[in-house]
Each structure stands twice: as structure tokens, then as C-alpha cells.
Length: 327
Length: 305
Image (cartoon, rainbow over all chains, first blue to last red; front, side, top):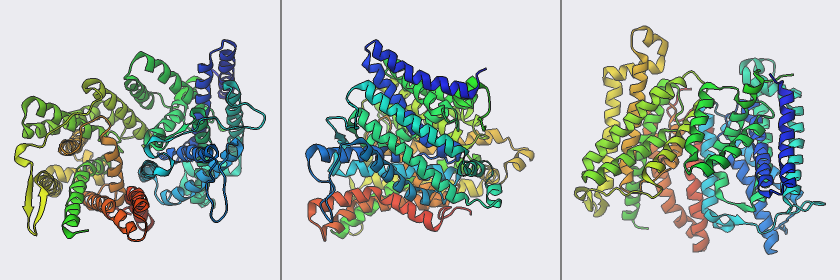
């Protein structure tokens, strides 16, 4: 049996090699699929921090995915039409520079998560699931009924935003950028998990009373984790919007939240690299079953049922046959 | 805005609330007794609506259609309880959420496969179409009035069932201490299947009744499911009384908000932007209501601390 660390390394290599091979074989579509996997995995890594590490079953992470997407959409649409975003009290222009968009996406998502988190974390367990789900729906309906940025139709951005020194319109370059972001975030989260904060978060998950007794402010630790997790998912949302050059309220829908949870579960809860495996399997399934049957979601549903009922620990757990690594 | 229109909207809100109650009652009962969060409840609502539309298309009888909706939803409810749900009672909420989310995918795509993607239509029976004159000179749709009546009747029946009958006693006992009642010789797994089927039947009935006002289509249950969650969070999980109060509150708030907010904003803004802001805010109103309840009573209006 493989050790989890080796498996993680293999996974990351595979994610890098497949698009490079596709480049050699001139199959740009495969590169786009790999980019999609990378970005969705990033969203999953974000959620995994709250859901896996913190035990906060958020069914509302589509909020942050959508906010990231709309941050990109709104800024880029203003840059595209050369109209300022805001004139009073001071002028804010739109932008098509990715790093700026990313920072805005992260900040907006974190602020929203602070608000949603303060309210939702008053509850726990099944209430928390329902409340986050409901807040997600609130953003969804707001995005549909607010006509300024496309309403139900969404926003189309004609040209992918720019990153200094890279031609983002070349698929492999955009993939490389997303991959680098994913690696940076994985590094950050692995450091975070091993820090005092990460240990407090995990401790609060497994035994709330004990964590409180040793003087950890459980609610605050959870809130911070929720906010960081939202920031990562928001960043993924901005990248996803850039991949499609399109933003729509669907990014806010509860199916999106469900999908991100599926990436985490398929890969294995609380396993840092789990969402990569989960997102890859999901996208491969979607692509192949979708070609095989219009009703591919039936098979997806049945498979998901099987994983939940019989194969706990997800793909990485199944392959490495070990409990979560707590090195 | 005239008083008549206002009363009409209030009745619409009541009708909406009563429908939400039928959904929320099943959800809250299932959570209270089995500790299970069931996302597939919306699918049972859809099953009820499709069964009703199918039978009404074949026989032309609305009463038969309603019976079919109850039977089909209860049957599918019992079926998924026996095959999937009962394995989930001891699992954590995350597993329950995922497994029932998977069930939604299976139900939705299965229905799409069986009935196609086009919406079906369920007609209001002739005896119930048209309007009635209410005291005060208000004309109101007879069908919607009937729905309010049926909903209140079901609510009363549910209260009687739970507070006066032997089954109800067992359900209440199951909520309090499931080890004890199984030790006392009650077959707990039969009770669970029964409760789940009852909740499913209520959802199916609700779907069939609403199906005659809206179209019957795949995915129709999901928005209602999430509203039912809002209702339960407001009312308090596990409390039928809370579900009724929450459902009426949400139904009336939502309907009145959509009518009144654009008018209120119109009193100090230009009409076009007042409509935009008003309707955008109206779509968020019940969630704001939920947030408000959470701030003051995190366990809901009737929830146990």
C-alpha cells in the first residue's frame, strides 16, 4: 500500500503531466479540463479547511465561489466598457489585471464569510448546515434579481484577464498559473494545519469541551477558519470565472455548494490533497459519462451513495488504507 | 394600494405558508424522531406532483390524483428509508447530507428520464376553479382557499395524531429516548419507516396541490426544500408547532414583502429603481428574517435550548 505522502506527490505530478502531454499531442481541450480540475480542487481545498479540519459542514461555500466569480466579472466588465465602477465619493476603475482581481475576490469573500460566519456559528450541527444553505440561497436570489450585472443571464467577459509576464489566452500558460496558485495554497494550508491555530481547530472539532477547557476560544478559531476557507474558495471562483470568461448566478446555486462538498468527500475528508483527487474523478466522470448518457447524474448519484455508505475515507483513504495523516 | 389587494396578498401568503408547513412538518418530524437531515424531501415533493399529474392525465380525476400523490410519495419514502436512509441514522450529518444529495441526483435524473424535460400541467378541477366572494367584497380563488383549508386540516390532524393516539405517543417517546422505547418492546425500525413514509406523504400532497398552480417539473422541489429549512430554523428543529408558526411567518413575509417593498421604496425613489431595489430586497427578506431569529434565539422560536 502506498503511503499518503507518496500518493499526494503522485497526484500532483499527474495533474502536471497530463496537460503537458496534451500539449505535446496538441489536445487543448484536455488542458482546459485539467485547468478546470485545478481550479475546482482549489475550491475544495478551501472548503476542506472548514469542513475537514474544522468539522464545519458548510453547505454555503457557493457564496464565496460566486462572490469570487462576480468580483472578477464586475471589475472586468467595467474595464471592458471603460466605465468607472464608482464615481462618488472617489473614482474606482474596473481592472483586468489578475492579481488585483484576486485580492478583491479574496477580500470580498472574507468579508462575506465574516458576516455569514458570525451568524451561522451561533448554531451548530444540523442547524449550521441549513443556515449556510439558506444564506447561499439568499445570495443566489439576489444575483438573479439584481439586473445591473446581467441578472439571470450572467456576465460575459470577452477577453481573459491579464497576468504580468504571461499570455493567459494560451491554455497551457493559464493552466500553469492556476497550478502555481494551487501549489502555493496547498503549501499555505499545510503550514496552517500544523500551526498552533490548525491544531486548535482540529482539537475543537474532535472534542469541543476539551478544547474550551484548555483555554481555546472555539468560536473565534472556527470563525477565522471559516473566513480563510472562504477566501481560498473565493480565489478559486475568480479563476473559474476567468477560465469560462463567464459569470452567472449558477455559481451561487446550492448545487455548486454540493459539488464542492463532493470533491472533498470523494477525495477523503480532511486530507489535504483529497480535493484534487475528488475534483479529477468528478470531472473525468462528468466528461465520460456525459458522453455515454444524457442522464449521467444518475450514475454519479449512485456512485456517491456507494462511497458514502460503504467506502468511508474517500479515494485517498482507500488507496493508502490509513487514517488521516497527522504527522 | 387598496385594502382588498392587501387582504388578497395576505391570503396568498397564508396559502404559501400552509404549503410550506406540509413540507416542513415532515422534515422536522424526521429530524426530531430519527435525527436525520433529509435533503431528498424535495424529491418526494416532486414525486407527489408527478404522480398526481400522471394519474390526472390518465383518469381525469383530481381526487384520484391527490390519492396517487400521497401513495406514490409514501411508497418511495418507505422504499428509500428501507434501502438507504436507515443505514444513515448512526452516521454524522455530513454523511446524511451527501447520501440524500445523491438521492436527489438519482430522483431528478430518473424523473427526467421517465417523463422528459418538459413541464407537465395539472389542471385545477372544474369544481374548484373560479373565485368565491369573501365577506368584505373580496374575490378570491376558490382553489387557493381550498388549499388553505386542506393545509389547516392536515395540521390539526397531525396535532391530534401526535398528542392523542398510540402511534403519536410512540413518536413522542422516540424523540425523547429511543433506547428506552425499543427496550420497552416497540419495534423501532417499523416506527422509523412509518414516520418517514408519513413525512414523505405530506411532502407529496404538498407537491400535488402546488402542482395545479405552478407547472410540474424536475427540480421543482429544491427551492421549496430550502424554504422549508428556513422555516424549521425559524420554528425550531423537531417542533411541529414551530414548523406551523415558522411556515406561516415565512409565507406571509415573503408574499407581503414582494408586494409591499417596491411600493414602500417607490414612495421616496424613482419608480424604476424602486422596483429593482424593492424586488431584490424582497427576495432576501425571509433570509434576513432567519438571521434576525438566529441572533435572538439561536435554537428557533419553539426549539429546545
